[in-house]
Image 1 (cartoon, rainbow, N blue to C red):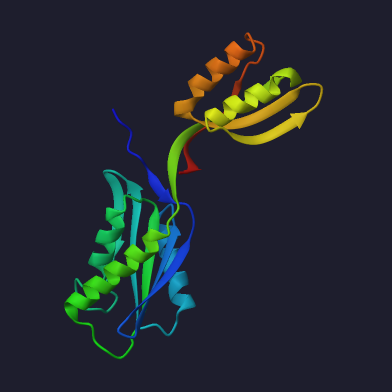
Image 2 (tube, rainbow, N blue to C red):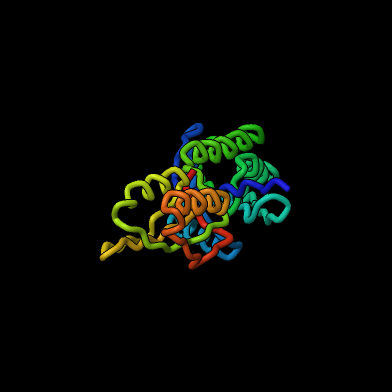
Length: 213
């Protein structure tokens, strides 16, 4: 069965749109739970205490196991939260929250104008998202002689290994994390390279590790 690609935002982002003198400030945050999402929403409200509206939306999880939420926060029903959530869900991201804060500019936008403005605010912040993926990973530790170190390093790079630690003593001890999909190829190749001399030992397995895309 093909695994769902679990995309998440790598970092927090803020953008702003001006629509007929109303300011629409979109804040996006990576979150891992409903509790984190609600805490983020509260923080945005605290940061903009004089704003007219704070329209929240979030998606927790991926695929069929998701929790979503949105609110119009005083805007006419269906003109703010749902358009914002629709755009957010269309991004394919999970574990993400967005709050669109509006400072009213004195001119009413009408139903269609509000739908477009809130949707565009979320689109704008999504344009700046750096994507990451939640992937199962395995951390290895191994000892290599100096004569093989450069070749082993190249193998780690080829298989997108994240080096977590390197100790240079009589021999070199390396701690490295791999996506599970790269693990077997790396261990087989390093064993062939060293004629079985370098043996990798599993020290940790993690079902959800953040990997930048």
